[in-house]
Image (cartoon, rainbow, N blue to C red; front, side):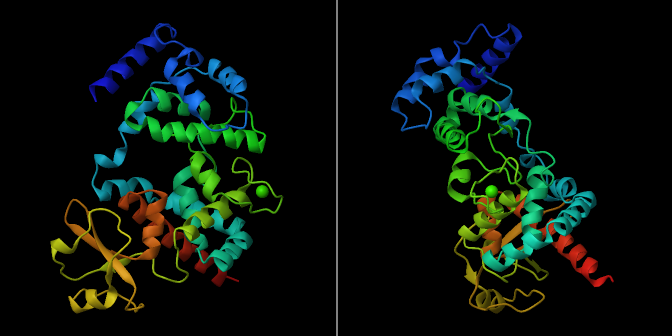
Length: 331
Ligand SMILES: [Ca+2]
């Protein structure tokens, strides 16, 4: 941790003195060694060196990642910030605007349109804010000046070059988040490679310009993480529970619903008794709220491992679904 702090300090100093402490990326041994060992990046190595020569470090990115807000709050504070009426209202508008495609996704992948919309809402405010950081600059900084995650980000960097090459994008111009994620659903480069799909039928996968490609890609991401059509998103538990039953992290394997019921846990509605669920707790200022979550909640946690994030997606989606239902009921 001290090493990282030192690097951040040096980085800030470098920024202050107009970047004279660091050698530029194309001159650094660790960078050149990475490039030497990398499998084909699409571009020639000389081209990659040229891009690296034009890229400066952005040390301020590292603290942005380290201060993820949810570590300091209660669920209720996080909920207040993310699950807002304006986000739900915009989600209803987004769903209305893209009804045909969302319905098509529900039909072909089983993923509910409201869930797709909610993820787009949290990730990028429905595409309005897909990130203003230069992706190459972010990924190079995190690859080589953030030792704790360097392997992860070096994989993303390699994939980013391949992506730009295959999609005909200029690596110097692509923009996204402070963690190198792009598009309406904020896909990191390896997710782009593995899960992004063509939604508008032009045979290109373009998460920078095509809303249809983004919608289809979010749906595909969840489908590929075992989304189950019609299964519940998250069940409210309003009975006493044994705190030992609570899972602290998202888990795929769970306990059959019939067993939960045998333990005296009840919930509104009736569901497949053999489906597996986990119990999660969410703290508010006054108490702890309990929820049972099955396969679909788990699929959302594959998008972002945070239980809070995933519950926020569900609650925004519930608001959107409710709004959509009211909309269609009107003449
Ligand atoms: Ca397309």
